[in-house]
Length: 108
Image (cartoon, rainbow, N blue to C red):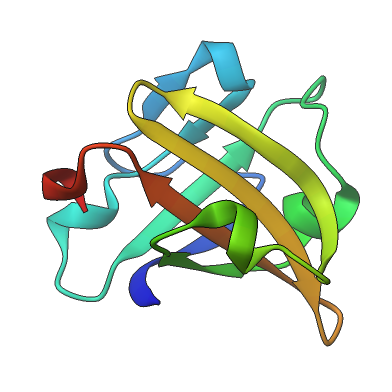
């Protein structure tokens, strides 16, 4: 696994908002800082677990998502938020963790 970002949910607006209408959320660019900090504002109709919408998560790039989620408590099933990327969320010790697999290995 390789650390990618930390997603911090907020209900307020923030600088550099990027609207992701197909995901019902707004994010900041986690690549604009050396620590991978990404603010996230989930829209009212966002279909995600409350745990994901209210508790910060850490995100890791994995080589094989299907192997990484095996025997884990999956709270968001594998899906593709953007071309070449598959993600899933698991719950670990009461916290959400995002696991990411890039189909084009040069993108991570």
